[in-house]
Length: 62
Image 1 (cartoon, one colour):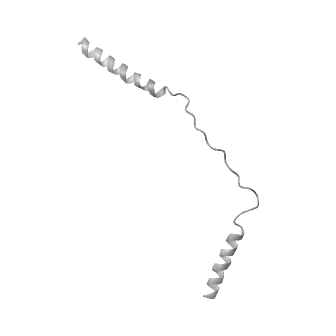
Image 2: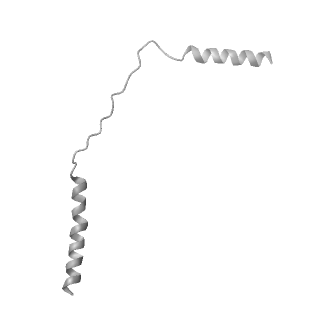
């Protein structure tokens, strides 16, 4: 039992001895996300409207 406690104490001491170094930490630059085209969502409305207009024209022609 004493050997187990001694081994646990030594392994805990050894793991904390190499926890860090003297160099300052390296910070990564923040990621900036920029929207390139704000009107793209409005352009997506035109395609269904054109399709509905074509379907309405086909129905009205019959």
